[in-house]
Length: 293
Image (cartoon, rainbow, N blue to C red; front, side):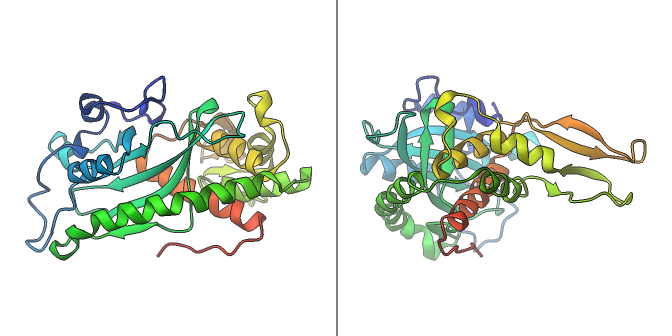
């Protein structure tokens, strides 16, 4: 079972087979739930959700799962799936963009089933998750199991609005100072910000250098534009994929030392970071931001 999100899709970005889903996120196809849960726990089954998504024409394009501490917890762990319809690439995007629905679920009592609107950017294998809170959240109780289909329908209806938002972001130009401010806000989705050292800090911190590398680190010519959508994408890639320098401060090195950041491999962290980044983009577009409860 791979836990690295980089390898959670096929090389050609096509739909995954059931065998490929099982190898990447075995909990998505497992039956039952953790036996230690309460008798009132009503499983919202991911396998059933996959079948419902297929009825609406959506195929699984990504599957990833949190690595549990115990082998016996594998069938119940938190997992993420992305779904897309075939031939739904958006026109006018040189980097290639496809609307998707992202599902996050578990069968261990640690997460309700959550559905998000999303998009997959082919040129850098980047997936975004719209951050206005969950499109739908379905708790694991017997009374709510029947709501899965309504939630999927609602998520599908939300995709056109997300596409309109992306088009609007492409028309918003940012000055260099705005790009740096965007990056400063964005890096706090993953690391604590360090404005000035006092000598008491311990841990890993983002600094102005981190923000500069994240905000202006251009990996390909398509990412060189200064519109909000492009800036958002390169900031997101540099945070999720890692590579920027953060300051690591310890008792042995109280003055700190620079350390290259690694990719985000946690399924849960990926969802949280993506939501926070999308909210940052909303703020820079002057939109009202709804924070999930």
